[in-house]
Length: 308
Ligand SMILES: N[C@@H](CCC(=O)N[C@@H](CS)C(=O)NCC(=O)O)C(=O)O
Image 1: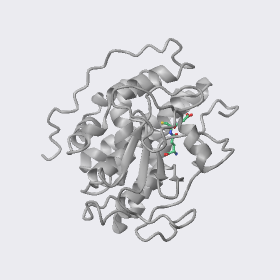
Image 2: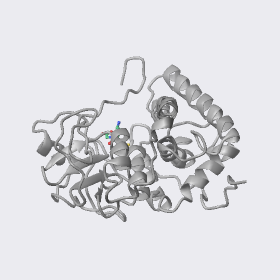
Image 3: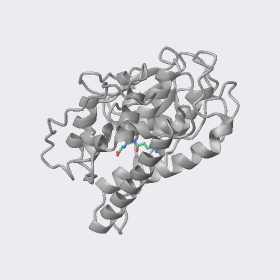
Image 4: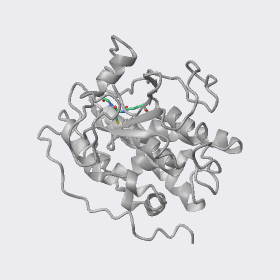
């Protein structure tokens, strides 16, 4: 938090890369060659950043190659824990009770923020990377020997445009909803709110002209936007006070969200019970009673008509 009342997201700590041959990636050290059964993903089904890694894992057909542990939806003050809740799992690698133990094991004395997602190397017994934007790039390419190699969400000829859209979406939408929700001054909240809806308006127009965010194919840019959109009406509209309008009030963004939801493999990554319980139950600073609203009733499975 800043004295201007603005919410600032921390930098991720672990920045090594899994690559096909173990050579170093853009940051960190090498020595993490892709292999099936070697890497493990720690996620929360509630977390939008973790959500993108689950989507890319599913679509690339890496469910068998990369195993997953799912934390309990409620995040206590000391950060994520494992516990009994439908869909949650124990820590499948070490049986730890807190995710923080995994960070301490990789970096003794770790005093940063314990976050999901985490990509963990079960052979070297250390965290490889905890930055979702980098994890999805690894899943997109490094594991192609075991996954769906022909699917490429970050094709070379579209990279500049994908990067530009990502930058806009990250700042104003993905993190923008948090900047609105966790602002501690009226001014900071209103600035985040205005930027959020201005950007949603622009994307609404864009999606009236084209089927996906970048060109005529689904790219990483779409999978980075989708987790925020799918949470919008259930959580961000009320809990984070992003209430100029709902997602369902934007014809193009709403049908686009439904199209992405209906792509085989995606619906199984959306766990609305974890999402609602996490946000309303964990952020007692902005929802002191922890009561989870029953609504809204959302149906992501109605025909999207985007192919018309
Ligand atoms: N830049 C990170 C952000 C991850 C992140 O902020 N995760 C949240 C959950 S949505 C978290 O674990 N927060 C822990 C906390 O607030 O203590 C990424 O994209 O992977």
